[in-house]
Amino acid sequence: MEEELRCVHCRGYYHVPVLLQCRHSVCLNCAKSIQKPAAPPSRNTEDAAASSVDETTDVTSEVDKLSVLSDADSGVSCSSRPTSLVGAEGAGSETQPPPAVFSIACPKCSQETHTDDQGAEGLTRYRVLAAVVDKHLERSQVAEPCQLCEGAEAPRAAQVFCDQCLVFYCNACRDSCHPARGPLAAHWLVSVAEGRALLRARRREREGRCGHHPQEHVSMYCLTCRLPVCVLCLHHGRHHAHDVHALNAVTKTHKTEVSQALQQLSEKARAATEFIHTLKTITDDVHGNCREVEGVIAAQVDAWWRLCTRDVLTSLTGSDVREMQR
Image 1 (cartoon, one colour):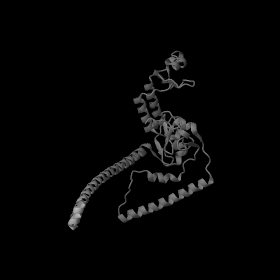
Image 2 (image 1 turned 180 degrees about the horizontal axis):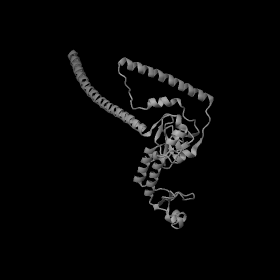
Image 3 (image 1 turned 135 degrees about the vertical axis):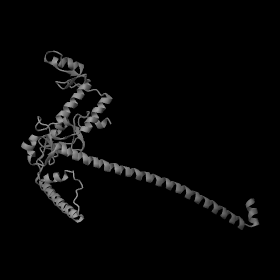
Image 4 (image 1 turned 30 degrees about the vertical axis):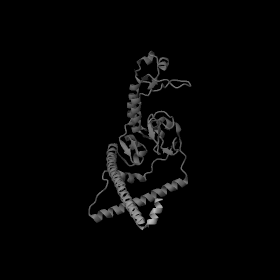
């Protein structure tokens, strides 16, 4: 558990973990430190991408035709996923997503993750992992390192947190760098636990805001780029021609699809459990049958041996018996 909660790049506990395209995660600051300008796509890559898009469009068209014919034959027009936004997303797929501006190589598997001009800030936040790390730090009472300790030695454990400076201080660094006098006397110093809670609250507040327009909250979702966007992005940014839906509607749709997927997985898990139980029952029956067959074979061998012994003794003459007795 301890190893899984540490970043593969900095080896510290995850701080604002983000997901790469390879599904590995790193800290946001680590992603910023290893991101590089993306190489321009080659001509062969562009041709291959265009060919792939054409093939996908042809397949989608054929599927749509078959779907229409099937509905017409049955006399009933239905949709298997009435609340899904897959169709809307496909309709907006003609608008290509913005070209890659930055590239991030995964420290674990070296796979490249390409991002737009937001860079690492545009990566998906791994909120579940962040919550697990926070719970682990609270329960295990892991010390928060001082952010101002210098030198070759490991930083001392922090004792206070400044809500204005957003810095954890040990006692020595607090006395030397944050004395309670002058303008610093009005700063609010709290415990390490309270500081962590304040940072989590501020982080949640930032996550609800647009990366391009920090003053705006995200309220829409771009299906082309698969990113939450604000109103300014929709009207004045590059998303104005993309397929955009209300964030609440997309959230409800995805929650419904996830719930359905979980229900299907639960049914499959229950069926697998029943199948395993059946296999165990069959195994017990096989073992029981083997024991029965073994007993039958042993009884038949004993009977055959007694029969053979009797026949041999019957065939022996008196001289043979006297010879054997000697």
